[in-house]
Structure formats: structure tokens, C-alpha cells
Length: 130
Image 1: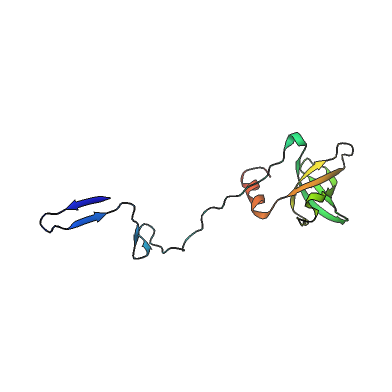
Image 2: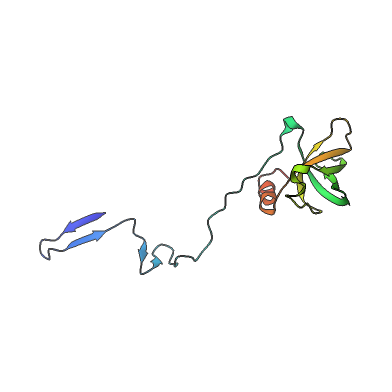
């Protein structure tokens, strides 16, 4: 804040470098509040843990009885089983990107443990995970 005292007029002129609003309009961008783009949203994304044998997969076909045919990103088509923890909470559709854990004793079956939302998939594509 800059203050000047003119002895002739004995007026105090105040000028603030941080004040950018004048008559409800932003002086720098010439926009009213509420106009313009929204601030960038923070997105939390879970990444597959390689130590737990988690990999990306894409849901291909709904088989019924909590089973889904998934194409894993390692090139193998597996029969996925929706774990009970997410069975009632998350609805999985064909084309969804998932995290699966292949079974250790049958390589053609896996457990589905996580489903990505739309903004999470876009973030994964932008950052080179998909």
C-alpha cells in the first residue's frame, strides 16, 4: 500500500497493488466474478501395485453371477470375479477400466478389486499409464 500526503491539498491518496477489483469487475481480465473457467480439479488415482500382482484390465463381457470377462493389459483374457467388498458399492459396465489380481493357481481367472471413474481414466491416459 502506497500512501502520499500532498501538503497543498492535504489529501491522502491510497493505492494498493493487490486491489484488482473496480466496480465489481476484475481490472486485469475484465471479467465479473463467476465468469471464466473453473479452477483445476484435484483427482486422486489409484495405481496398480506390482508387488501385489495388480494389473490394468478392460471389462469386455458381462457373464452374470458377478463374473465378467476382462482383457488384461498383459494380453491375456481372463474370467474376472467381483470381490464382495465392491460387489454392492460399484457398478461395473462393459468398457470400464479396472484393476485386477490374477489368481496364483489358475492364470485364466482373476479378482476385480477396483473400477476407475471417467476423470480418473482421462488422467491415466494423459500421464501415460494407459
